[in-house]
Length: 238
Image (cartoon, rainbow, N blue to C red; front, side):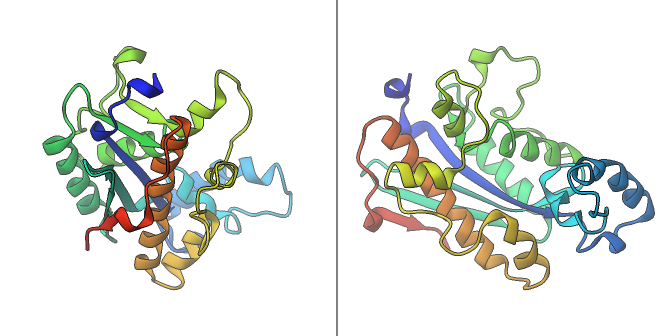
């Protein structure tokens, strides 16, 4: 299947998320109570944790978090790679702009999305947040009722399993394995919360997110036995 994929039809992506509120105490009371219940998962692992102390992890749940950046990339005819990011403090605007891209340019039967751990995280998170904001789901994300072979969502982590059911394999590990320049040379996922709420540095998060998107594309090329995209052929929309 990998060899049959038309890379020109694939939009590679990655998202960065944060909790909906800066700290637990800033959340409305009803959301504090709901987080109290959800946080039991973390507290079972460490009895010293409190709902407030683990609130920085709320961003991994679409019900308690929000998307602050979606970076996308596409392989060009010349073998290059073009990156673009949708980043905004206004999540609804960010998602509406991203949805417009999919509706206009990635709405055909051959188009696909590709992300690392996308089926467990990126795709459902984006779809859920779009539904919350009343945004019409693009065809690629509107998968309810579709048969497995009708869903055009690729996942480089799932590809690496080869039918196995091992635990999560990070993109950093696979990048090291395939000698791909690591995307985690500045911040990592656990630091996004602090960079966003404490440093107010969304631009730094965008750079981090874009590096992950490029790595996903490079990883797929290595899976196919193809050379890496040269750094000089990577372009970014400003």
